[in-house]
Amino acid sequence: MMQPVLESDMKIKSLKESEREHLLNVLEKTHWDIEKTSRLLKIPLQLVKSKIKAYGIRRSEPKGS
Image (cartoon, rainbow, N blue to C red; front, side, top):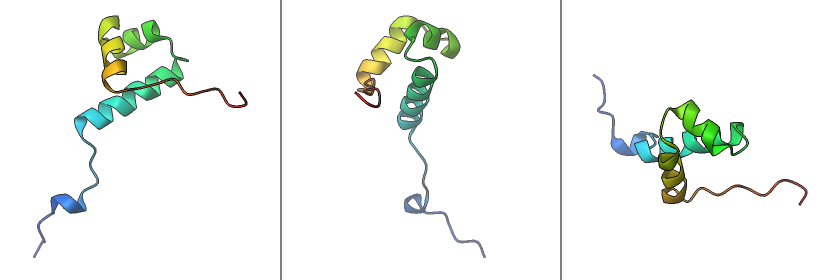
């Protein structure tokens, strides 16, 4: 008999967590070119800017500085 899957057993990110992580990955791959990020994600530039602010995403300091 199969045991029910408990929510506490699942390691699933929320949609917001996944979206934040994906946005950050795209920003890093585009070297923080938010216009390119906007085009790649097919969302308006203003939406990229508002999500960066809403998620508190900040550009990390370059290594060695």
